[in-house]
Amino acid sequence: MPDTIQHRVLKVIATTKRIPLESVQPDSTFEALGIDSLDRLNILFDLESEFDIEINDDDAKKVQNIQEMVLGIQQLLDAKSGANPDPNSDAKPEPSPTD
Image (cartoon, rainbow, N blue to C red):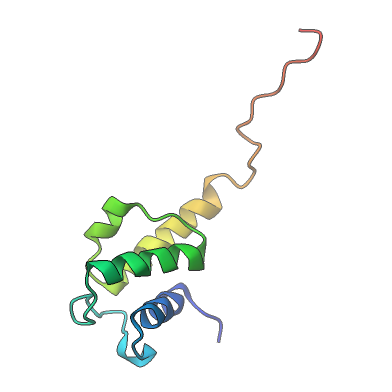
């Protein structure tokens, strides 16, 4: 079974918090899992590394549960993959030597 985004998020949370994966559910709140502000920060760093994304601190503070976190990561991944597939597409042509 391939790892879904949700499964990967659950694994990161379980690993970072050092709790059994089975205890981390998509509808779990951070409070129910005993995740404090320092844990959240560590989880964010680990998620950024896992998914090769940057998570905005202000947006991250609004997230209250794992499902919101999964949705936010999905949005970041969608934006990353569709934002600019060709890194040179916005590049302006260099002037020719005769200009």
